[in-house]
Image (cartoon, rainbow, N blue to C red):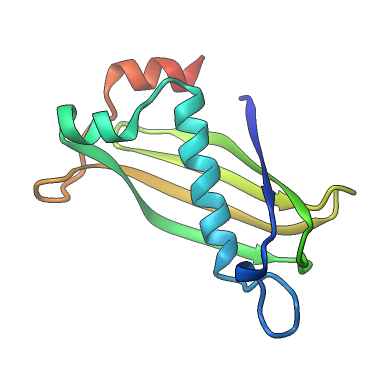
Length: 133
């Protein structure tokens, strides 16, 4: 499986009083990377919602924090699909410093749901094909 990579700069708004990235912001970085990963596959999430009436939600997140990134650090945030099921994906994500030091890693379950009632829906075939490529 291919690994998608997004560069994310740490801004002042991202750090706590100690000058390190506030832990919850790693969830934001991971979300941003997943959105860009889908975009790189040609998936327009706004169109997916408007036309298909579906989208992805995080059903489960397991996160380990290893080292704190600091203001102005450039992080490499990755997405790698590890499992594909009918209605959800398991993804592994990491945030690393430029020197390769691991800041945080996560295992994310992203479920496909119908927006009208938030019920699980099969991932559309066109998307399954793009993800599997």
